[in-house]
Length: 376
Image 1 (cartoon, rainbow, N blue to C red):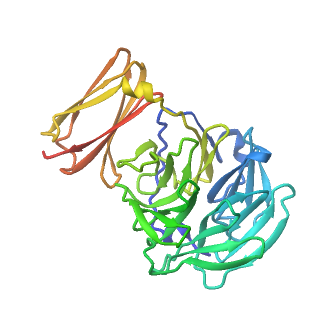
Image 2 (cartoon, rainbow, N blue to C red; image 1 turned 90 degrees about the vertical axis):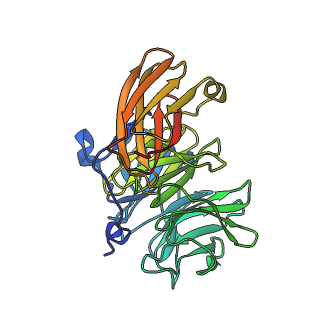
Image 3 (cartoon, rainbow, N blue to C red; image 1 turned 120 degrees about the horizontal axis):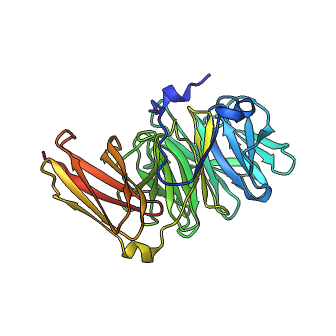
């Protein structure tokens, strides 16, 4: 049996921190203990036609369905190990290490199973507007990572991006970007965000994030991208332009894996691989007009051992403040209350690393960030 947590050298955390967003966790705690069917949940997908989430589990090999009330049941009973999944039309496709399985969404019956000899560990997948399926092949033992293209109708496959063509080491998940006719790839070990042209399969790097160890990628209705990181134990949001640094919207997750987005309710479904749970996070977009009326000031910068932050906005309520290093390590956190138009906080940075620090400030509906040079 493959132990993914050892293979990936992933970092997990037992602390969960709520970052001013609505959150629900269905796991083995409290009254739902006897109903928890999740075993190393690796990937979630929202089945809009049936108003449910489908979760593929690595530990048990089951596909668990979670309805709108949080009730769990088996879509498919335990069998082997399962990784990524995606829905195209009325079919659920699931990667099973060295094969791809197809299931009818109405009946749950298996339609076909396609072995792919020579694959290493098939993981995240997506489909384009023509119905073609693309699957990332994670070569955890070396640098033979690749992407397969599958024709579900004929049940045939080919290598779309072969090894040695610029693909990052350890592609974890991929998502289809219809507007640019490309795949966007989230990587684990080397951790760039890459693009693959569907015209000629050429690979390019979109951005190199300040953190790494990405497991999943999802996109919301506004074109923002969300990535789960085992470095930070969190979820980070990029704007459509992929401007660094990304916004951390939650951390403290216990092995955040391959997440999905529910476009109907604006909810992220985030599986916790090491927590046997799924976190459901409501995402509230920030209006441009409100952003224009708000500002975050940080001084002095570079820091000389202490920084002052001042947030000006019309919002009141709780304010969360975080500082992390450029590789995603959290080095400071605090919270306070904002009752007037301005919020002040003084932070002693003399005991923090002398490096580039990233400041995150969150309110109930807005987020702000700044990069700080700590020279003390």
